[in-house]
Amino acid sequence: MLQKLGLIALAGAAGTLTRYWMSGFVYDHFGRNFPWGTAMVNILGCFLFGLVWEMGEGRMLIRAETRAIILTGFMGAFTTFSTFIFESGGYLEDGRYLAALANVGFQTVVGFGALFAGLMLGRML
Image (cartoon, rainbow, N blue to C red; front, side):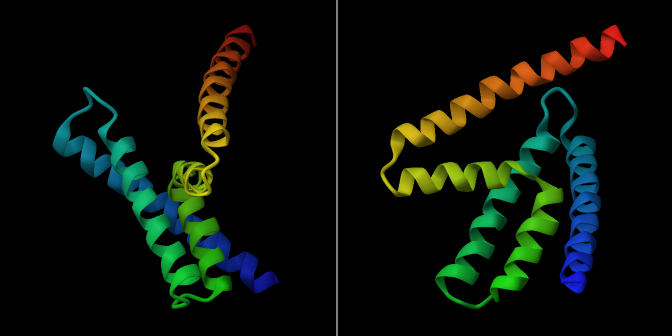
């Protein structure tokens, strides 16, 4: 268990550094007039999450433990947006359209609310 936690932590560090590098690279080449760096990280993260999941769960080419290290460690640090999209996509695949809409709507609206609450609290301190 301790080894698995260490591997998740190392994968997380790699995901963090990859996100930092990729965002900077994209901003340097496309400018900062739109959050292109974040968008590219999120889109690539969604693609990679789907690829790793299918290669592990669907085709059994990646062991469950390795998949957990990649998806929780690397992808968790690279972008949590990919998990959000994966979970919402699961609802859509299951035909649970209302649940997908609720997940997207709830996290988006409440996320904005939490952001502004944190900004307000930070300004008051």
